[in-house]
Image (cartoon, rainbow, N blue to C red):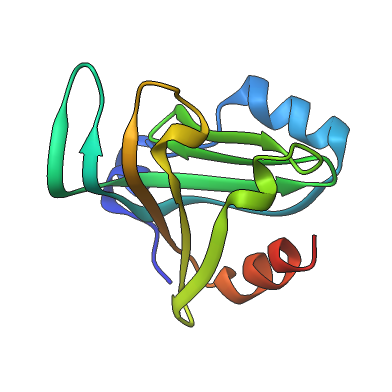
Length: 137
């Protein structure tokens, strides 16, 4: 699967160096960068915004280490949860097709004043491998 145009031209969507170093010390199991990603908000409410349904596309990266799951929107962390955290058990993992990993969760899981559902999609040829590892936890 091709990397995004922003990644190929400008390197946007790379795993930030400080996170890559930390992930390497934890033992990287799987990673991919410069991939297509999206976030979908369903019945979402927060103090700053709301949306009944909204989808945003971006260049993403995702890393699974022996100790945590990390995902980035451009270079901003959007998921950073240890595998031993009780919140990790409440994340819902699925495959939309063989190349799209879906991670969905209730918005209040990470922010007390948020509600609704947040869905992150990552288009990667390693989607099945990520899914198998994440479901095995």
